[in-house]
Amino acid sequence: MLSAPMAACVFCEIAAGRAGAAVVLDEPEVLAFLDVRPVFLGHVLVVPRHHHGTLPDVPAPLLAVLFEAVQRLSAAVPRALAAQGTFVAVNNTVSQSVPHLHVHVVPRTKGDGLRGFFWPRTRYGSDEQLATTAASIRNALAAG
Image (cartoon, rainbow, N blue to C red; front, side):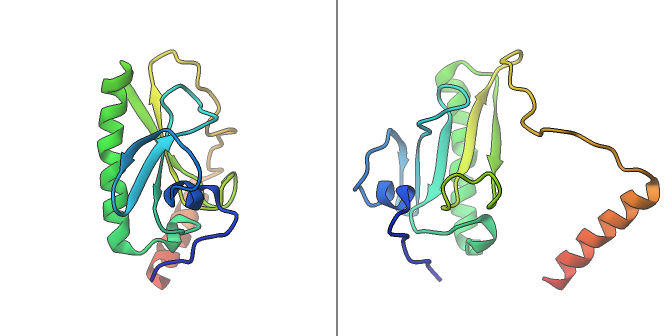
């Protein structure tokens, strides 16, 4: 089921051709363009053409198409920019500046200075806490 385009969604506007972007991939179901506020030059956003707010909202068949494009871009970006690799990330609601699913493909090079992307790191207080957390996630997956 397709979600309706959001009237004020800038990514829907870009996908519809009503707003400009530096497009790097233009396909029937997926669009990719440069982020206007990149972490590093060459930072690409990959979006489904139709509006889906978060990753859980995307129909399974579209996920395959979307992530195949992400995979191709994660190989092309380092070749194009002489980077050593990429960082690929998806925000869901929290820290999602545009409420239209988008996958970040960020060029990376050893020593590029990117730090703290996963802000404070922590540790499990005990093996029991580790096991309980894993069981909670397994239970949520099983419940659907």
